Length: 167
Image 1 (cartoon, rainbow, N blue to C red):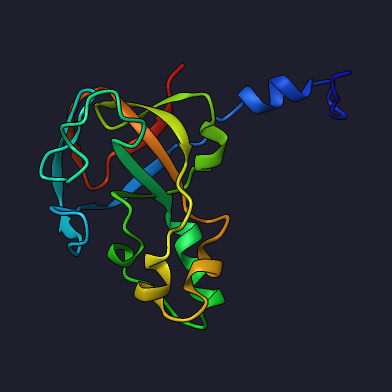
Image 2: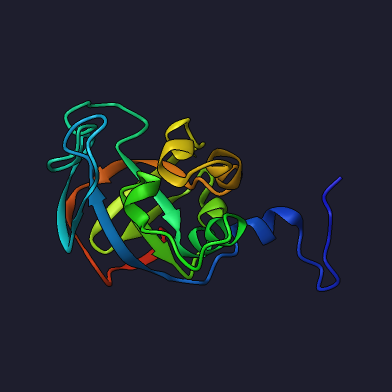
């Protein structure tokens, strides 16, 4: 049985309705596995490979070519750790976006500027969060780690790019 809202929309219809657009607010790449992230204003996304200069780049077919996290979740994690803010690079995600619910992109393709991505999964925290954020960092990140994506159409990503669902 499908659930209905008071307006008569089915749950499936509600899931497909995502009119909000977001904005790219931070970009980072990891040149090597355990290296600190480098903050960038612009980066090239290579179709089915990853971001230029990132250690995950060059692995065709990988489901983890790009990682994304919501700025709103970074604020929540900071709050749980009793901090006023967190440096995005500590969280080891490539892209920070705000204004769109990344979890609503499940099974969807979406644009970040001129780059077409497809959500491939959730980006769960790793033990590095305890090192980077201090005691409780891993648990603070649980449920707030963001998503992984594959690059379907490459191009340039730059701060301020619009994030929107492929229609």
